[in-house]
Length: 280
Image 1 (cartoon, rainbow, N blue to C red):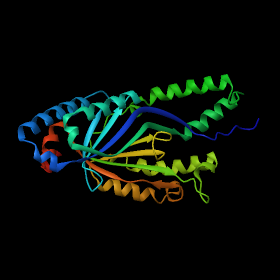
Image 2 (cartoon, rainbow, N blue to C red):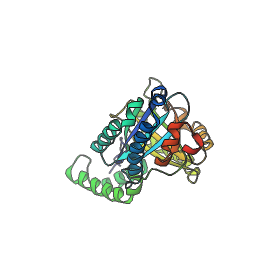
Image 3 (cartoon, helix red, strand yellow):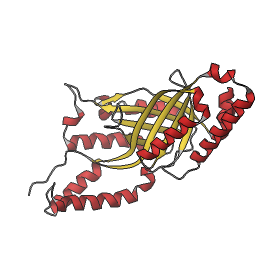
Image 4 (cartoon, helix red, strand yellow):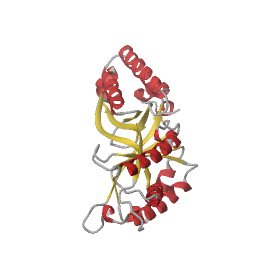
């Protein structure tokens, strides 16, 4: 019997993710009296502290942004899209939000791509005489994915890493006339993703990576969050990955956003312009 070859890699989905990038209306903020500023910061800090301490997969975190693309980034993990909407509305209803202008956002879902597992699942199920598209195949596939979902629960519903620095960027796979990721064979895509992953593993003790899928949710296909205590590590891993086949030939990258973690206790210092105290 000829081996059935997969086309689309299976995926596991976890927490829903929302990135919000804001610009602070500094002139308006400085124009209000100190007592009002304190009350607004007290309310916003209390909300952020509660969101920071929520259970894994349901947290929010704040980051002071570098460069012209914004001043403050909020990263939200929630169990589902209604949870993201709730977080979005909670932020918009804070009185501090009157002084924040949204400049960008990104919606995605934590995703684990299963190129290796997909191949093994197809080999196993076809070896048992099952055919794709049948009820028996679908049931066996679901059972296998459910086991993997349980085993990967920590990765699918992650805690926001405590690292000081965050690098976020969206990316696509090329679909052009000359190079098109989606017409390459499954075996070639699997090989390239394996080689790509080997580079990421080299940085496992330095960088925490969270990949989220956004096909059908936002303008790019994936969002990538890198967390580290050393921002130079972002440059090193991204530069090295540019040389592997999957990136050099098939990757397109969106804007990069760099932030420094601002905990609830540092929000007041951030809004007063004390950078060192804000990120302490």
